[in-house]
Length: 258
Length: 258
DNA sequence: CTTTATTGTGTAAAATTTACCAAATAGAAA
DNA sequence: TTTCTATTTGGTAAATTTTACACAATAAAG
Image (cartoon, each protein chain N blue to C red):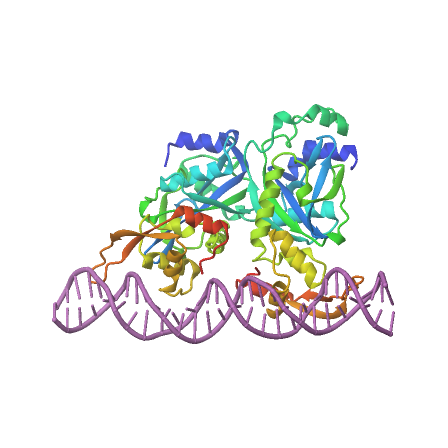
């Protein structure tokens, strides 16, 4: 965590640089070993986890702010980012359940109840996709930890962030056919079995192991490389990479990959 | 327009009841005679048109606020409403190009530059769908007119509302396969030719006049009624209505209507 | 050089989509 | 009354896509 004086200034004077009443929260997804993962920030003072988030500078576009916020917990810029929904229920934050006295004590501040932060806030939800292996999760200015969680093993989250994750996942699944989602979750080189597993995991259903990659290759969306991966005592599979030009074009013209 | 004192109070004290920095703008679509229509509000003082919009009460959810705002220009409640994107570019409103002196004079107020309204605002975009024939457009508190425009004949709009319309249309077109959009645009009873035309208009491409409705009937999404419509010197077509239960269920399980 | 587990090719059957012919029919015109 | 015109529909065959599944290929361990 950063210096106390810096934090104090943010709490007292932040509204001069950031817009009050509006925040951004990001569902950052990765994929590893047949599991969809999500990045969660832990807050000791609040006793729970939530999605990495932050406020919007008065000079920033929403996309730029989201990029900055995502970079804080992943150390990566220019991740694939997509705004999916804005959350604005006045009861989305249960103020009565938050213990400001404890929180103030915890971070070493005398009193924060008059801060611009303690007021009704709507939040713009973004989801981000990244190659799991490139990320080293990093705690933010206010959070104490940041870690990957399997999507089906996340603890109950603070505020309305359970709903945010649910909606982000739903968007991810429906947009799988229209945006280069699998491409963002996989490393640059992958085997047919790996991309097949990504689709099965995201869709939550079985896809014929032979027909599925056959279609991808037939459409020219992925290209076979002249390299193999060593997987121990079995036939070595070829590596493939996306033909991004054809892939995005196919997605634009409405090709579906069932 | 409402009384001057009421308006003055909104401009000076509105931030006590409404959240500053956040607004909602609605793209309200209707369909008539092979044309997709959109509702636009005219502002004499600003010299142009824009989407009907408004602010969010501190006690409202976003959806409820959108409902209220849409009702102001259509007189209809419970329209089909869907949030599609939030717009937050700090340059989305060109303050320097807006003539407040003229505007203040026009509405009979001495000075509004210090109002909570004159500050950076992000806007949550909603689109609404309605049976064209049920709406009588109505000017709002601040606007001077409200009328239907053919989607391909709208004038350049104020602020970033051209972009809003573009994005709303794009969302509408992609969601055509996943939400009961045609159902909301048509009257309760319609002919096969009419629903065929709605899809052709929205998709902007030809669909086989024979195969398209046949599929709808085969899937049981629409039901033939025991009524015909008189269309002059031609064979009278049967009227149909949606089987909403089957229709929404089919959409959920991913049936596409190409 | 046999065994084991996984990758990857080929092909036939099933299902769906596409193209389009021709009959039905309502009112207007002859 | 009969003919004509424009439109709605029923049907069906061809083309295409999807699905199912048999089996050959292959890497390395024993």
